[in-house]
Image 1 (cartoon, rainbow, N blue to C red):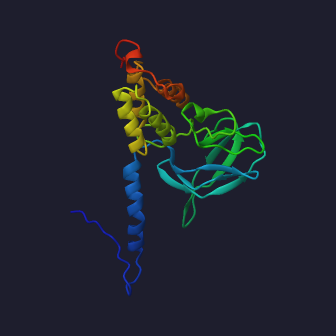
Image 2 (image 1 turned 90 degrees about the horizontal axis):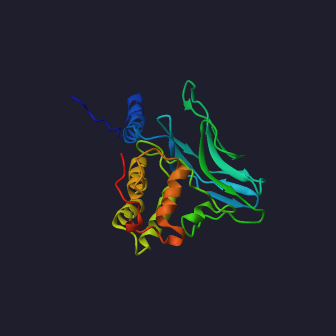
Length: 251
């Protein structure tokens, strides 16, 4: 027979090691059960802002090597104007002391793509004196070359594989729902994007392949973005259901 034990920590009682063990095990167990089949990636936070020669990266959390890792807010000096810069979280191997399991990590701004053991948090190319925009007019604006935060490559943790930024999917959803010619499949998927914090990679791939009558296959973040853009269309005009290629998707 099993028992569920919750420590009470009442006044006048002796603090026991067993009580602290139970307190530690409960949140770890719940997180591990809930995220056991999720891919590594961003869970929450990591908003980027630029002001007076500094980039501020807000607090956030990632799922990495079966561990929920919280990261504090940090401000980094910035001088790399007119260059593509990628904000990354670098995670180092964990090690144990007598009392703690420790994993060192580093928030950094670098040129080029994320390396091994790095998780991208966004990329941009900033002009001196400009502000870093995050108020996207439409889906195409998410990849404006200068002074705009590009979130299209951020790997978000999700079941079965890394998925794309919820902000990207919400922008797509609003474009679809404002389009009176949008088909039923597009509308249903748009409501899913607005109502869910995370849309799984599997759901996203099935939607894109069925919607565009393509064989089901793995797609990179760039390929996913390009297909969302094709469906939403420039300026939100979209592709009418009747204008798709004839024939079913091949699986």
